[in-house]
Length: 333
Image (cartoon, rainbow, N blue to C red; front, side, top):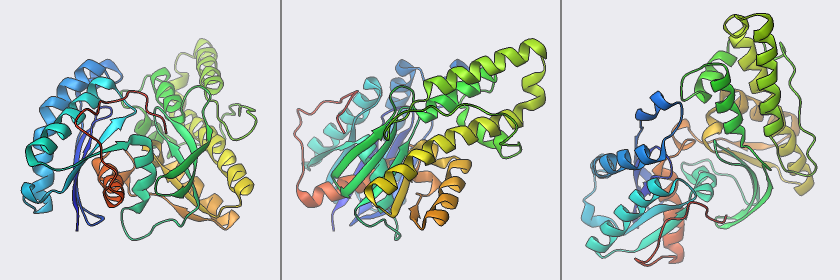
């Protein structure tokens, strides 16, 4: 029964998790509020706060799991992709912990871990399945043939879906982080109030830069006519923007499912916490006869449980790395 300590520090969440024989016993996430004043993540500040948070997070994860630190069999950590300074904190801690305890190190690709979050809990997709992985930095459709046999069959050519939502929130004057606030306002608005364009990108790839520009010009022009336009129509604007982002994502996902003749469809990544996207996938899944899978909210955003479960499967394979391992800001999928 291998016991894995998972470490996640790719951006601004410091997280630690304990996985025993494929079961998550704890998942501690320390958020960073320091970035709110800057309207986005400041890499240097993020790395400094990781240094403050990582030891307490690990201690809490071990205590909540009810195990002794000497019972840990391996340390799994996010090697990349992510902010280099943030990754460095997690990688350095993992290496030091493993060296002190004489246990193996397991490197984990952050984006693969988002996909493998679906193997936390009892309800799991069957291979092969498609996973739409959507976050602030990535938008991908992944064909998953096995735990570590994954192929990106569609991805964004420019901005990620989460970035489009975050930039929209800035344009609307909403505080950071804006994605959840877009979601909140959208629940109260009319998604058909305003029409935004859908990019005509061939194949299974995405593009969100044009949509972002269209939203910017739409707000600019309406504010010129009515300085109170955003304040008076915030809910409808958010609902309309969210609807367009969701339809772009789901239209490509539907195309991929038909192309590969796959019925097991999964959703992952931070934007998978968006209510409109979750509801949209469930509705489309019912129409298409899909088996749909969406992780619990705590496993959607960046978290160490997904790192720990990925580490568990790698441990079973004996897939370890040495003490010379270094973080990678860009890590091949």
